[in-house]
Image (cartoon, rainbow, N blue to C red; front, side, top):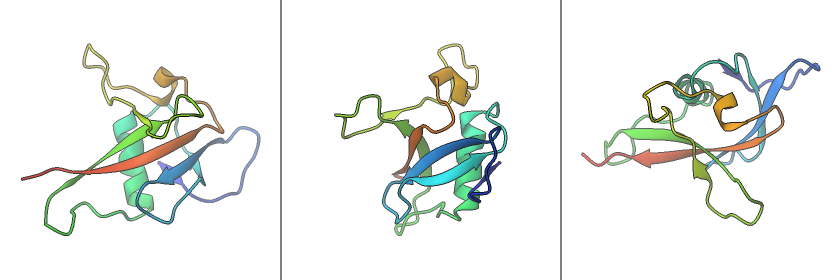
Length: 111
């Protein structure tokens, strides 16, 4: 589970999170278990920040994690929840380390 408290020690795994479309920019988020799946990490972020699960039109919202791979990029690269074999991915699968910046992106699913 993720936690947005800033009480840190040297063993903490912290990401800097920007939640697109909100006032949250580069918020320090403590990752309780970096070995949980990306899907579980996203669910924890949505829960901690009490993000909506439906848009204004009543369509469900899917949240994805993205990472800027190059400083010159404007759009983050989406981190897939599963690899090509269907195995759930974790932060380490993308080389994400404590201190990295990620983006939470909301995508309404048209019904």
